[in-house]
Image (cartoon, rainbow, N blue to C red; front, side):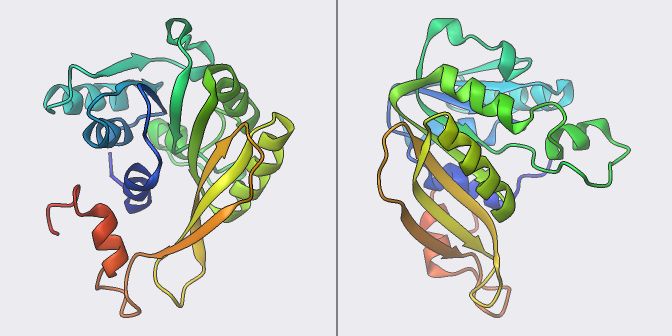
Length: 217
């Protein structure tokens, strides 16, 4: 599976403080492994429904220095109990296409389309698994972020921090990384340009954020 730049930004930007972290829809295991690298004390649970992705994540976790702290679970988040544990931090890079041309690849559809995990069920799962003082960090395009925020607030989950991602300064925002909690606070907003306006040179801010993860820096 491909590792997307925006997912790497989520893994580097989200607050991963706490003892227990949950990665919903781990895919390759990227977010779980980044959380383990950033927080040396945390235990991380990572849930994945797709068999091939789960197998790949298992290989990646096993080959990493963090295998003793990352537990992988195959199945739907709706059926994940966490053994009764509530999590300090939840990370999610969810599918977001609803009415969009389908791929002939079932795994691609699961990764990109909301059929397997509608937003309502995602919010219900997060509400069930998040500590009262915990944080949920999610990556979505602008329109989907707006709709998710509207629905999350009905479940008493409120945005408190948001990073707008742009390919470069002259391009529109293409993703938002949003932190939610049960506390109502004013929203802190930031913007990150991945490239300089030439579209090829990484910005200093991007380099600084990803330096511990990108071997090219």
